[in-house]
Length: 461
Image (tube, rainbow, N blue to C red; front, side):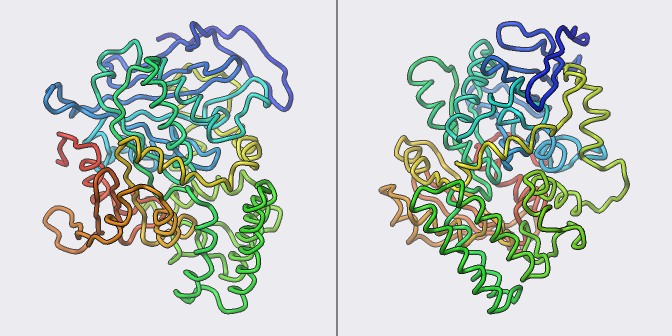
């Protein structure tokens, strides 16, 4: 597809966006000649443009008895890009050096990456007041995107869609799940919802912050003095959440992260066995309070896990360089991640809001819900995840909690990779030797897991 014609230079508060033509709410979409990739913009609301990128799996089958699944990947932040991080650093066909990834989830499903909410990654808004402020608003925008992608595509409609989320993306996933169910019931959305998977997700902020101090003390990362300082802030956060002072709780959460960093000598929030990948000298109070710095730390932690080194592996350089040139339809003055700081700022009132009730509603509606957790994660720790799961009101919970776990292996390797158990439509995976980024830390067992979640007929070869 040829590059779209740019027609207007809009001067708006804090933003300057050069817009392509949009037709029926969707930009001129593009793709590869063989049809294996498609991408484009969807205008989910006037002035709010969401970018999507769809990969058709080379392993896709057309057996009606074994429907081929589609995975919608939702990243966290708020403000982190699924098109960038999830795609090139975790599960897509290529890594940030544009080399083939042997563990790509395309072996089990088609992949749909979306830069959500608007303002994230390549997605953008023409006026900053069009940014969303709540998880529900993000879910509604995503439902609009699914309606415009799926309703006119019978091939997509025949494939069950699995919403797989990481980190803060879990809160979008559950609000999207409920919004999509309603749209399907109202016959506004033609889609088969296969299930929802919550990977190290920020479903209950209170349960996670409560877990940080005890966990770090147990592994000798902080001493009693640091523990007491963190516990004092945790009590403050709990009271603020109870009082509905969610913006204040977000600020206290940021203060707690700073106390943890200082008292632990910069523990890595995404793997508590490591030091933070940030330069300790530059980790000033101002930097810690910056939302964009938090998002960069989220991405750079993945950067530090790669064996290869070299400037050509930088994600920002990749997305604003060769990938932007390949896609062609990105407005010239839209910078990948350029509005991410604003995205986080607009979520300050909802960031510490729990979404346990939404998980309960999905389970009650019969939706398959999978929870998976990396053993070494701190920010969305196992302790915190187990705590919020135990708060579910779902009628199968007590039976689920009483069940034993089954060990997980991978291939011919009989070393324990994790554990799992399930009851009715709730599934739980504990992934050993993995931090926040399970697909990166344990790619083999993660691929097996997603094949099981999606009931995929795909191969691991």
